[in-house]
Length: 326
Image 1 (cartoon, rainbow, N blue to C red):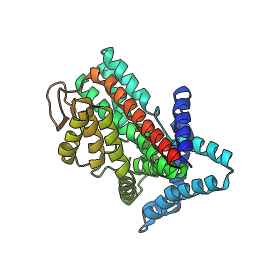
Image 2 (image 1 turned 30 degrees about the horizontal axis):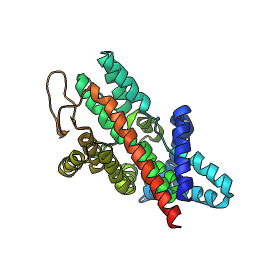
Image 3 (image 1 turned 30 degrees about the vertical axis):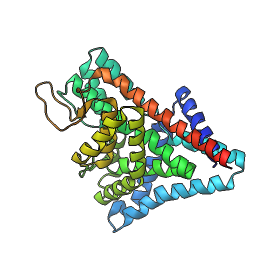
Image 4 (image 1 turned 90 degrees about the horizontal axis):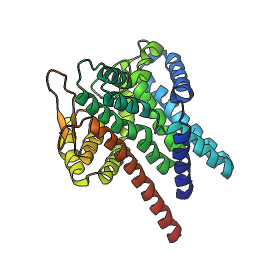
């Protein structure tokens, strides 16, 4: 795809998703979960060596190859429509935004218990006793990570490889979330309740599946995560964002999430980190300035939108430069 049609597809999908957001669970996650479970079952749930690599390859690389084949075989007009459809299924600007909005409204209304319940459902962990400020900080962290994985990561690979790039990233992220839902082994993934159902689907699947999917996704996500961090910096306080990224990201075991959260915290000019309870404060703090609270939730949405606008503007300028140079 040319840069012009890539930009056109992105704008069309982003606008359409605001009007008609996709039901990701029904249309995307459930079919992928059935396919993934069938592949795992077919190869004995990981009891044989290296089968996790084969299943991952069939799921991610097989899906990517099929998408590339269809894009190549379809006529130009149908190929464009196919790219728009693939991007619509892969992109998820509003897949998780309802959690953010509902938590924001609950905190504004003083309904802290409801906000805790929503946050627990979103992140797949329990947050009993976490204060309203702690809920706000965790919500901002999850929003920054979610914006990257649902939007910017997909956009990056769509620009680089077209629709097959978006499919590759989406399937790799699905395997990362899904196969690590049952066992966590030192990586922070923010899985949420959808992926938590994997333990029912897969039962006692081998830990090797989750480990391989995690390492594969971190490789695929290495450059996109850093590009998103740069967009956060450009969309907010650039100097403080870069400072937090360089000095504080090394403090977290999950470097990818740390880069996103530290750059976002610096761009917003707030401090994030592990939540404090109503009785005490504990945990690593990152960022600069005052601790983030409910008033900073709206600023987070503004940062994500500014980062997205910067991304589209850069792509538009590149498109014009290529056109003029050609």
